[in-house]
Length: 228
Image (cartoon, rainbow, N blue to C red; front, side, top):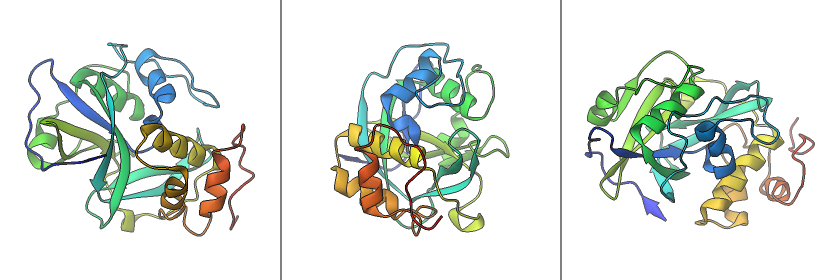
């Protein structure tokens, strides 16, 4: 388990960063589609992939300051999307993937529904901890800290968790997040189920028991989840 250190690292030309995934890209099989291209299992979208299609050098479980919450409606997952509010009180469980700054730029571009390339300007986010590149849902870069002297970077919405209506996530999406956290190796299934069931948007709609059962199901059709 790694906790993020204070921001400070810079990225040299051609250097590496940690892409911090807190949603479905925690799972390597899904991340592979953003890098190598393709359509993930149960996915509703085909991704073009990155210019550099190699997989991450390594991955590590990390804890970030802030809160994970679910909001808006995903056309892929048919429910709330995961967002990160770094200013809120709490702790976010995530998975950091070590890759080139160019690969991170291409993953971010695909989440922003832009074609991969050219590289994003990471300077403002690295200097200030946050940089808004556009008005979209995943067009705000966040630099929550460093790990082993290498900057951690992720992207989220420009708003805070308190500024938006929370939305229940689908069973397929919750299962994907739970599987990604379990794959990270730092938390057991029970802890993961309790964590996800207590996130804003999921709380009151999913119980820890229901989330735990999703990890044992072969199919994640949205038949679970209390509260409609």
